[in-house]
Image (tube, rainbow, N blue to C red):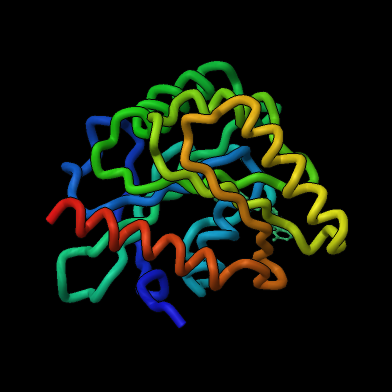
Length: 210
Ligand SMILES: Nc1nc2c(ncn2[C@@H]2O[C@H](COP(=O)(O)OP(=O)(O)O)[C@@H](O)[C@H]2O)c(=O)[nH]1
Ligand SMILES: [Mg+2]
């Protein structure tokens, strides 16, 4: 039973790049379409009901939300970052440009970024917007694709989804260090193994920095 993610607490909200704290402890960012299940995944991984805001009206939060990890009396050992969703149909063009300027730039250039969790609704698979997002990611960056809402699929369908999403990503983005996993915030499928993996990313990044 791992524990680092269970210490998560709200740290800060960043609405513009110039508000970013100086790069420090390793950060793991959650990205994906609006409504894909990012906030639910963070809440489940951290065993907190309302840490990240989960909403039935998607597309409303347009900021990076930082959650600190580690013992509270020490400097944070790392951060989880909830990024604004993309692709919500009603999102006006100005908001979309804002996404590029904030979350896109953050993904491309943040030196303390230890890994990226790309959250996809397993029933939608890889969308054109997911592919555009992958273009922002630096070669060699660690990416974990969470196929969430897997409780909506049976075992056979889940295996087919994993295979087809993997194939679809391998076709386009061979330079990325990608792993995939089926996940569900409702049934806890994949939760413990993802916790372990994200903690390993953070620990490895700290060792590399030391
Ligand atoms: N069945 C099911 N529904 C989920 C799961 N994760 C999220 N949802 C639902 O999907 C909707 C969007 O989730 P949310 O976490 O707010 O997505 P976000 O916009 O990516 O942060 C909400 O209605 C959630 O209850 C899951 O694993 N299974
Ligand atoms: Mg959200």
